[in-house]
Length: 209
Image (spheres, one colour):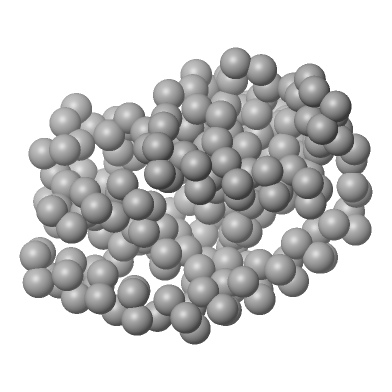
């Protein structure tokens, strides 16, 4: 797996855009998240109802994550696991399938469980594109991210590491991919990540549960 681009078009990723890109990125996040809530509210209501019918409330899963500046925030997702599931990362469960709701399996396959993060984006906790926010207990990769300056930007719903292996990546490799994004953040790279994210959702590549 190559972290750094090699083809002519991929080399364009190495053109650092600078700080001027971040205000434009934030404006896009607010506009796109607002439109997502406006036009996708009906879908979110249906998902919430299905979760409630199967396993009652709460329909949202709330979890503390590490954001920009290493400040913690509350991340929102649709609850895809039973209420008695341990509050840890799915990869740390011995048998995550055991705890998945029936509707939760569909949510995970389609990534629709991430829809409530539109609220995180509007609040300013997250961006559409950026390194995925860690659980505070993930100390090893958190330390590497600190060294690599990853906490200078908002975490994202999807990111460069997520479209280059996702759950199956070794920790150091994932941190290096996060660093690559920080060093080369710009419109071209963000569009490339969006395109590859759509592909990954349909192919379910790099998902370990």
